[in-house]
Length: 145
Image (cartoon, rainbow, N blue to C red):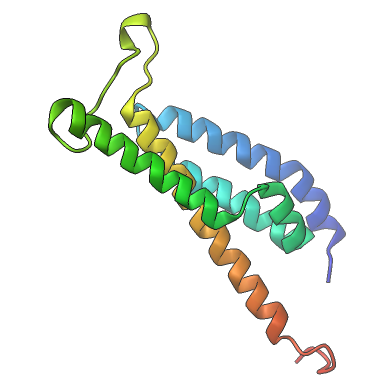
């Protein structure tokens, strides 16, 4: 059953939740928050969209396969760890190559991005798998019990 109220609220809430997700990710790069909480917020926006508009619409909004998103995130996190390991001899050692020119981006930002993508991709994959399992288990002729 599709709810008109939920659909209307979703059109306003999803962009707001995604903006908050990016804000928390960006803020958490140097303060509490970061990739994990930002990824959870983004996954919550996808979950809301899935419940309001269906799995197909949520998958279109995500644009990429959730498992691919998680794999890219894992690659980012491992790359961030190896970067410090190869340059300074310690896995996950922070590297700041652009700090001298005023850009506070480095291996820690790359690691946070990786965590963000892993959390988003994993939760979206679980949500989509659960939705697929429920839709294949539902018997259309049973009357809804």
